[in-house]
Length: 82
Image (cartoon, rainbow, N blue to C red; front, side):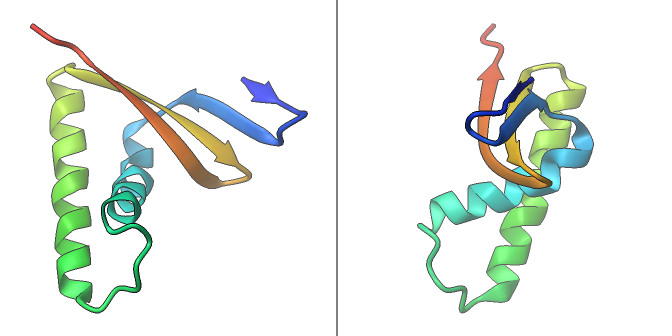
């Protein structure tokens, strides 16, 4: 779906989007601070992306993303509680 007045598009996320979601999660966790330890950042993103894929395979979560152009600007995750 698109809201032309705001210039963004939102949709259901797919596994191809999980890298962007993991990067967005990193930025949220670090409050967009300058990265000094690139190894820590890369490991965080790798682990986060793996976890997102695992949860998707287990059908425990769905994600929606908002985009401007090809840039993910926001995410909403809904987790199934059992």
